[in-house]
Image (cartoon, rainbow, N blue to C red; front, side, top):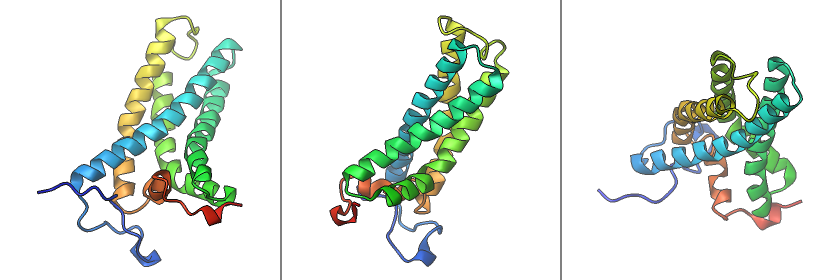
Amino acid sequence: MSADPSPPHQHGSASDRGKPQAGINRNALNWLALNATLHCLTGCSIGEILGMIIGAEFGMSSTATIALAVVLAFLFGYLLTMLPLRDAGISWGRAIRLALASDTASIAVMEIVDNAIMLAIPGAMSASMDTPLFWGSLVFSLIVAGIAAYPVNRYLLARGRGHALVHEHHEGRGRREDKR
């Protein structure tokens, strides 16, 4: 059995979207799901770490710190999707819509898992930035959050959703005439 290098989504009609895709190479799907998860995890991690650092540095409450970290995680997650789309010639409006459609479920799962773990680890939310408890808890929570989001990304990709919506543009096959 030879590997199929094509992405695991089809560009069919609107009625085909959301249906499981026939003939998807399982290895390619797993690889794309891993890449989509790592992509989302990168944006989430930047925002989450920045939010936790700001919260710890300014002595913010756990609730305020988590709220800030979640907002920043979504912001950076979406930005990491939008900027390559803009580079591929996609308009701001379309890039925003694609980022929202491709990343929201993955980022939401990561944020729920990450913050639940941070709250569950005794002292993690009140630990100062110069302690192993702060960094160890944060790294552990982000790794588990990424693991939790992988099946979500795989499911969405298999159905032509999630990162399948932006994959062709991230590969540099965007349409330049769409830029506004």
